[in-house]
Amino acid sequence: MLKKRIAMSVFGVLICGFSVGIFKLAAFGVDPFQAFMSGIDHMIPIGFGTLYVIVNAILLIFSLVFNKKKIGIATFINLFLLGYVTQFSYAYLQELFPDPSIPIRVAALIIGIVIICFGSAFYMTADLGVSTYDAVAIIMADTWHLGQFKYLRIATDLVCVIVGVVLFLTSGGLFRDIPTFAGVGTIITAFFMGPLIEFFNEKVARPLLRGKEEK
Image 1 (cartoon, rainbow, N blue to C red):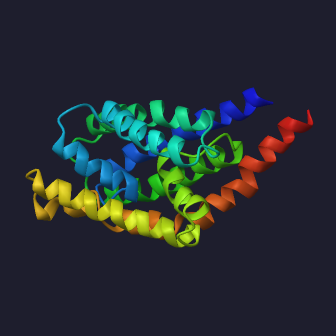
Image 2 (image 1 turned 30 degrees about the vertical axis):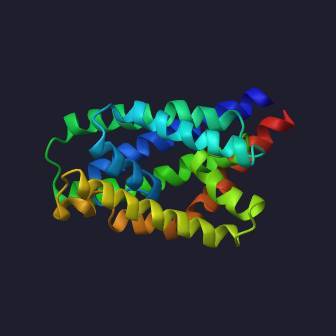
């Protein structure tokens, strides 16, 4: 049974990583944490995959110090896999669409939203640990008792976007380029992903897991 859950976690992370590559191609904004990563990526000249591992390793230490209950196998799958999948999928998509038109970018945004929700449903249903970023708001709510998780998550998302923009600008980024990583796509992922993830949870991920468990 554990192997099946691990497979679902790996599949979910692969799909989510690919979806971030699609979001980057769309250039209408990525999810809040990836907006933060975009700011750091613009400042530090190393591969995105390696940078993702470093940042998440720091967050992992934070989680292990304050509350390691939500850290599991899937946490490490996410930590070591998602950044590299994003890096290589984005590079591949850039080769396919070196100068994407507006219709292609809009289509990429829509496809990216659907795919990231689909992948997140598998990752969440597997229930083998949360990402290091998800753990931050959980610790703030469950360990530090600073408020309800949903509000703290909105707060951490806002901080990520703001810090990402500041890092981007201070490292020489242009103001006009901000919407490419902190734009309409960011707003959609921050506030409207929940219902679509739950849809895929109910219609695909949970029935698949239950079916496997019954066999």
